[in-house]
Length: 288
Image (cartoon, rainbow, N blue to C red; front, side, top):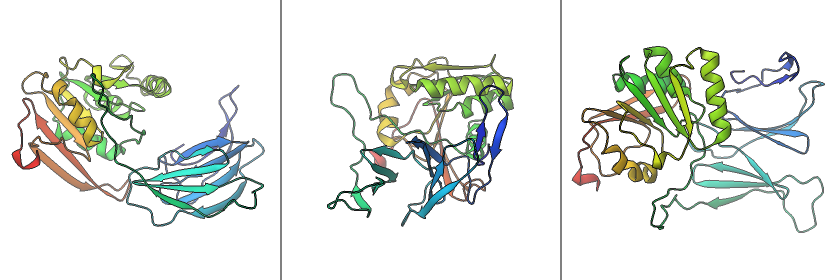
């Protein structure tokens, strides 16, 4: 509920309890393990909470060290009694076992991660992204920069929770199509579109974006890493002349943007960059 944790009765849909916590954000990430909720907050706190309908009980918390500037908190992972937290190009590891062996350590380790790589198989594939939602203010700016009209068809590649296609349908009354490989996010998108009253205009396919046919699109929205953007260039070049491509935070390698917009979002407190291209794409020798 907008960054406010809540416990719901699945039979009635009613809230059993709600609890506003410090630094709460809708971009915080949760994971359930051994009857406990591990909450990673985008502003840097890690909290341990009882997963119980009896009430909100926080058992412990700590601050994550030296965080990189970020637009979202990636999902924490627990495996083998270890809590793993990614922070940009670092991986933090914490021992969360109740009983530790003599040679185990409760201190964190920092591991440098390699950059994502493109596969070498005959059919090009890119490492799958972690879902990080685009802030709502950025969504609005992306659609404005693309000059979306009611007659347009908007495609979002890697559509996540569907917020971009839903915003396009609600704000402009246009048809919008998402491509998302995660089945749970597809279901969430469809439910959100229905709740927003725009399900007749919004379609979300459970599909690999690298195989999506984009020829019907007038506008394509993206929030992908450079390797993924580079892999999409052959598909983008097949778009109809005059179609617009808009990307949040990352530009297409070797391709010159027509417009670049930088602004500070009140939602995140961070600076965001949005890039716009018009088909056909124009190469930029300085970026190749």
